[in-house]
Amino acid sequence: MRVGILGSGLMGGKLGTLFARAGHDVVFSYARHKDKLAQLARESKGNARAGTPREAAQDADVVLLAVHWSRIDDVLAQAGDLSGKVIVSCSLPLNVLNTELVVGRTSSGAEELAKKVAESRVVCAFNTVPSEVLFNVFEARRKTTKPSLVYCGDDAGSKKIAAELISDVGFDPLDVGPLQTARYTEPFALLVAQIAYEGSSGPELAYRFERFGK
Ligand SMILES: NC(=O)c1ccc[n+]([C@@H]2O[C@H](COP(=O)([O-])OP(=O)(O)OC[C@H]3O[C@@H](n4cnc5c(N)ncnc54)[C@H](OP(=O)(O)O)[C@@H]3O)[C@@H](O)[C@H]2O)c1
Image (cartoon, rainbow, N blue to C red):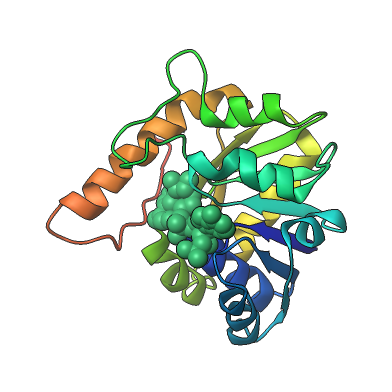
């Protein structure tokens, strides 16, 4: 797939690198310095290049949105028309200090994002894991037991694409329903961050859901 990365920081930089290593065609965009994007493209050792948000989005089969919530409007404006595009968003609707969700209970960041993009095909994924686990999970991707990664969305085709990307980086994709479910997964992401960063064992946290009674 052609994957456009909007936001090439901890999440976008690492996921873009892994998508390229998994064989996808990646364009890194949106960082404060262009050199960083070129460096990410070089170091991914896959089919990757640096570009503007518009270049990352225009021919992409799927875009990964990985910016702080405060940068969403700016990156969307720079990306141009995303109507009908598959948007996989790992952005959480956090305040500037990253301590609290600024959307919740009756909506979610993912749903608010979907309202901003005409004919949106938003999937909420990748935001419930600390970025520190991504390379280790990718390295272990051929093991039979993989950590779960939840995703939700309203469009079946987009969810299929997101599930493929989730598998390609080594997780077991777990469909948790419509985009509205992000009202539960976004607070869950904060719980994961609390366990990962405020616990004693560090951020190397990847979890697995099991069903009992079947
Ligand atoms: N990190 C995690 O473990 C994690 C886990 C779950 C969810 N999330 C969510 O994922 C999203 C991205 O998180 P992150 O940790 O990847 O953030 P990050 O490392 O800060 O990356 C954000 C990207 O946006 C770029 N950026 C910021 N301001 C900019 C500006 N004015 N102009 C151009 N580019 C700009 C940054 O540029 P630079 O590269 O130059 O800094 C960086 O590439 C957030 O919504 C976060 O809540 C993160």
